[in-house]
Image (cartoon, rainbow, N blue to C red; front, side, top):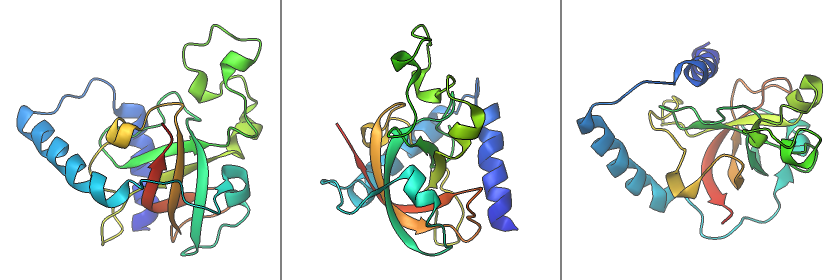
Length: 178
């Protein structure tokens, strides 16, 4: 139940993150935390054996190790502003809006030109959790050069509450393509 609540909290944070400001003291703490985490979770080389997001969705087994690659996207706001959580999409299946008829789309990483049923089968959630299984209270955007529409490769395990409908990976390491 705690893990389902965490997933719902992440979704709520995605929708409510606009316009919130942190006091200067918290911003400084977050920056220091990012530097500490960078050396321990950012991989210097792309891990071998990664599968696409679509392939990973077929392998869901809570606790099972997985290495997956995808594009940060699938939503207008794929990063949760105050949590170490993001959505990645299968760019081998989905096409960014700039490659389709709607070339004027200001947010091509959201794949808004794709039918919802196609998009839903080609995205998953990546999160970094603490030893208690709680999502870290730190945003990922900009961390290790992560950005919307950027390609990442994630090593981790399927979360205990992951299903083929709600795919969540508890990340241990990440490689950010430059």
